[in-house]
Amino acid sequence: MGQHQGLAIERRLLLAIALSGLILVGELVAGFVANSLALLSDAGHVFTDLVALSLCWFGIRQATRPATPRMTFGYHRVGILVALFNAALILLIAVVILYEAYQRLRQPEAVEGVLMFSMAALGLAANLVVVLWLRGQAQRSLNVRSALLHAGGDALASGGVIVGGLLIFFTNWFWLDPLVSVIIALIIAAAAWGIAREAVNIMVEASPRHLNMDELVQTITSLPGVNNVHDLHVWSLTPQLHALSCHIQVNDSLLSQSASVLEQLTSMLREHYRICHTTVQLECPGCESQDLYCQLPPEPSQKPEGTR
Ligand SMILES: [Zn+2]
Ligand SMILES: [Zn+2]
Image (tube, rainbow, N blue to C red; front, side, top):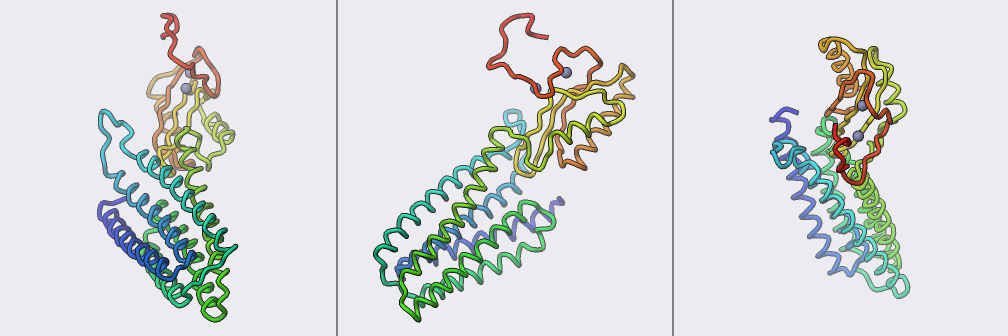
């Protein structure tokens, strides 16, 4: 990504974050004034949107921050830590909404329908502006694309509050307010679950979900010059940044010949599997362990013969 383009995305994201923050405050205030749980729930949903946009912005910023001797991977994973924390927070918000909705379904409270749908309409309009702002960037950045997907869910939630507010205005069916809240709480919980699952997968060094490992192994071993692959590790630093390390066995040959095998392997991994950080150990027949996936001991062996 060019620096100019990165700056353009950053600026648009910051604007979107500021706008979402305004809507969040507006919906919180209007929600309390109108006594509308649905509007407060929508504020909760705008909060998840704010989190997604902020993480996206954070991720793009991290890409410009260099690695250091202490942080050799750079700071990419910090975003995952933040995502996990936020997912827990969002799940908690969903639980609180569900509990409050349960109370209100048993004992409906009077709600200000007009304020409810006008604030939600404002939120929907702001959401639309954010989508239009970021749409141009979505083709270039996976991060932005996922934030946009999230904004789509937001429109659904705001739409629910608008319809609920209108119906309450005409009919005084106050139970609609907690009902809409339950739907929004479920949307929020689903979003949080998705974020948490992805973050945990990355934390435990799971291989990226878009990878079929059997197929990957087959593709590597089918490269001319590669006899076998073992001690294979594939992991992700962030949802978009993947790394791989492995041993490959090649025939005993000149280093310059092996280098072309290596070149083929790394470019294949980059182009077909979006794995951009590759570490390969070239071996001729005779490596001790041939396990495809290595067995790491719980702690390093103390025996001198255990060291190579
Ligand atoms: Zn290993
Ligand atoms: Zn080996």
